[in-house]
Amino acid sequence: MEKDLLIGIDIGGTTVKNAIFTKAGEIVAKWEIPTDLTNQGASVPADTWASIENKLAELDISKDRCLGMGVGAPGFIEPETGKVAIAVNIGWKNFALKSIFEEISGLHVYVENDANIAALGENWKGSGNQVKNMIAVTLGTGVGGGIIANGQIISGANGTGAEIGHITVEEDGAYCNCGRYGCLETVTSATGIVRQAEELIAEGKADPLLQRKEKNGAITTKDVFEVAAEGDTDCQSLIDHVSEVLGSSLAMLAIITNPAKIVIGGGVSKAGAQLLEPLKVAFEKHTLPRTNEACEFEIAQLGNDAGVYGGAYLVLQNS
Image (cartoon, rainbow, N blue to C red; front, side, top):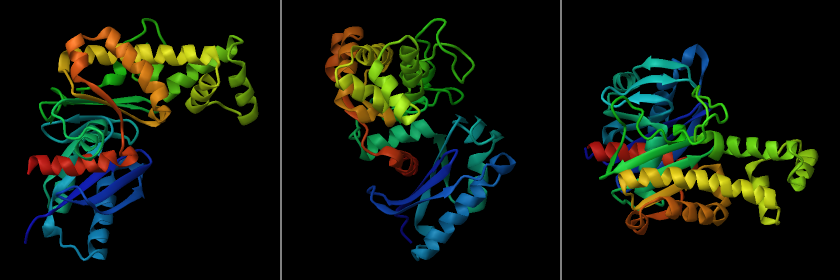
């Protein structure tokens, strides 16, 4: 029987996203299940495989048609073993995810960090357009990153490659969840932008933001960008600062990796050109002219599906 299907899995703290693909990258089926966090997430692999078996049966697809499963998981992944060293959001520590999945499924299983597989997915069927060298950045609650160099994802010696969000950008800056201070994600994540916006309000600045907060009970990054677009100079200064910090960080990475594309995803990327234009200006200021000439900026296209696409591509890449 021809092995013509790929399974992509993206494990998150709230849901596990699953999809079955053709080798050409066409979705056969896509669904999700809740992530069971009880007992330190011990049942997540079994729950996930049970849902996949049910879907295969529902579609009358033999497991023998599947080349394997590519799995993205949060936290630090040991690239050689597929073991999750630590995933705080789920409760895993030294969790043998690859071995467990292979034992219960009988399929080849490949495991990577969730940000890395999102980068692979975005490069395969999204904005990356299959370039050989790419940096992907996700600006959400935190800042995630994935670096593709010469067609391969950079995992590093022990799975901490491309932890872009934890580049130090502000000495004595805000506290980060990693336990240090002044990391990139304390400035350029959605959480970081809102924190800085709250500081503006506390200083008596950005009156339109205060009005939105009083009306809605809270402010969001969307509010910050909208108020800036309406002409508020305080919010525009905040966006300029975020763009400068992110642009200079990406410029340093680009000098090292020389990407053809930098793809920006996550909720903050919905600001589109309002974020991208000042970001490109900051990037050009801080990087080498020749590095800048080779590099294009794009907004990610696949959204929450990037992980399952990347999981499927991981199978394809290793087959």
